[in-house]
Length: 380
Image (cartoon, rainbow, N blue to C red; front, side, top):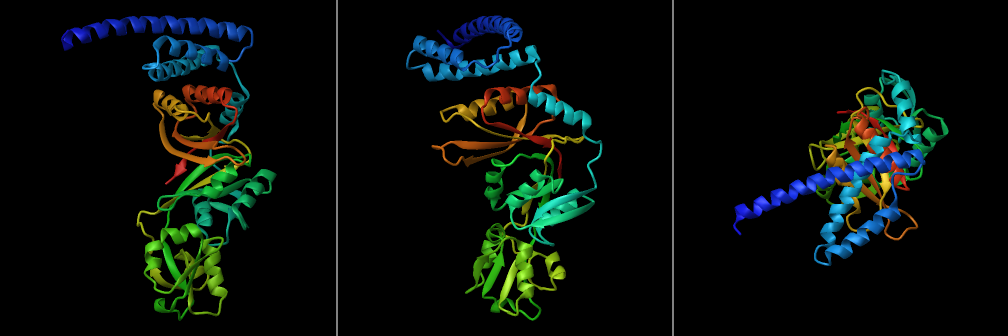
């Protein structure tokens, strides 16, 4: 048999597969009608496992892994088709519907906002980018920002989640598992770090340098060039600048933003000291209630999946099937579990699209630990 004959046979097999696929999907539709009438869930784990076991026995060891991929994907498609056909409402779909209809047309320009740090911190600068006239309440740590929003003390909170040089802010991601919140806006802020000292300080005399750990990491190459200087971690960059300003020593300095020099009457000993000149940090603005403002084109999710081969692939493939671009994937270990992880996804996904809403409801139905974190736009 030559290549042309082989491809001709494959075409005929594909034609038959397509006919059988259409027939199978029609049967899925009939099953959806039955499930809808009898109030049965779309996802039936035991049924799918039984089918997979039967198929793997039929194809044998050589093809069982390939058959598993094929049929698991087919199950995903069938479930999605049933969800669409049943068009049943759920708590999540109702919540999204209310947010879309009740959220104001314009994002508020004024609000009470929780930020970690003190005046001059990058969280404060991000807050000023998001709001025109915020009333900022400062807290010592990220946990307190979540608690302030959760308790209703502040309507919003601003938190850093990722830096282009130092990576994800793991502490914030770990706190996400423990608090109830929604992301309502994002902001990307260019980070330019400076070395600040008291008036009269000289770079060659600096012995101790204070800053947030992630800021010290962003400037590691410059700091390594200062011989004999020790880096010391404090809660944030602005607090480090304030600490230096309140000191009577001329041999201490802080890594902070340039505007902290004027704010705390310090001198710029070196400017633009970050390793990467295209250094950005992403911030999220969180709220206690779900708010979806016009222009929301980004969606964030959080859920755990089965600890077995192919689990993550089957989730990601469903994004791809709908043409959704995955822009961020983060995993964090879940405490008190045996190698179980919580996954965080950022997608370019318009929540107004019915397909996107159906996918979220499918995930909510299938995964025991699934959280819709919100849909929002990001300020660049």
